Length: 131
Image (tube, rainbow, N blue to C red; front, side):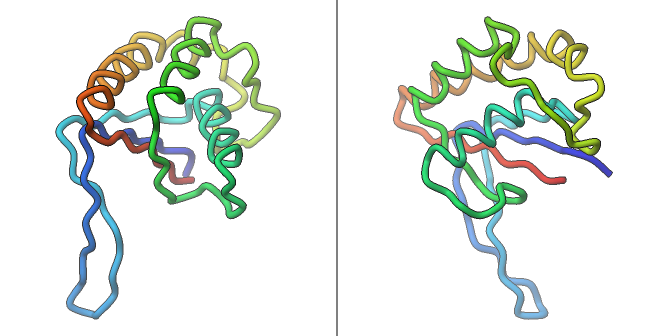
């Protein structure tokens, strides 16, 4: 168990209906990014989720990122997420968040670059998490 995080670049949401009749939304994308227990990235996204007026829990939701959001994320990455310390959340990997910041820095930067390009081309970028 733990935090799994996904970002979808050039994303399209679609509804899926199972044989049982259950429906759910999924995302198809040109490029997908994945993180495991990157608690400071999650802290950033969780705050962003609530800043956008969402009141429900962020778990298993889709958050569309704008150019401004991505520029803020770019600044947070450059600053080693100094303002996004994770206070807790065993399943989020808070106990090794400093190491995760360093281990994921290259991936985070690659994501922001790809995402900015997509958004500037009029495409969608979506972040989602599951814990």
